[in-house]
Image (tube, rainbow, N blue to C red; front, side, top):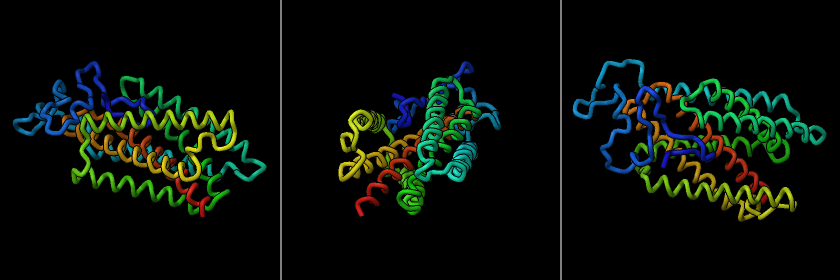
Length: 284
């Protein structure tokens, strides 16, 4: 069972023709001594703790992950800001802006699927995904700010940052341990969550109103909290994937996959918090 994001499509670190072994959730079991990159000629030698062969600059580092993630999130933030400023969301133009935002979301989804099925990460695809996803988030955020209050968007951004920081600290302190059982439970729960949200959306589309009520009222609050918790669990899985990639010598290009996964997870958390705060604001 591979580590994955809420879209259920992102694979783990890949095995390419050069012999780099891919990350699989079976190696996330506590206490395992198996090196998932054992066939990597630059893997860490467990006896010496040093690379088995000189390969400076060829393996993934934390700095690589940080820089690629900063580039991906930076692209998303820039396009979200442009969409916020360029597309009006007043009542006369809201429909048109929503249509453009929905088109951007569809393109972002297609690009994410294409990258997910590629054997190797493509920086161009990942940055393009971030650009279109950011455009969609800009429209949604602007509409939320216009019809509710600017504080809702600010709360969602700060909440996303707090969740990221909290999960990172919990993971580093080993309060969260990403095992095979943990991964299987999170994947099953997320699949059920997504299926319920799809069903709710279909009932809203064809039946009108709030659908099954999973995104409004007290039940909406419960599902919003569940969505945030699932996002936090996926963050922990992302951190585990990055940690193993760095420890066992994943190829440097795989840092783009880490950035891709972290970006998707943070988008998930932001949207869930935005919906949650929107419901809470409406109950005031």
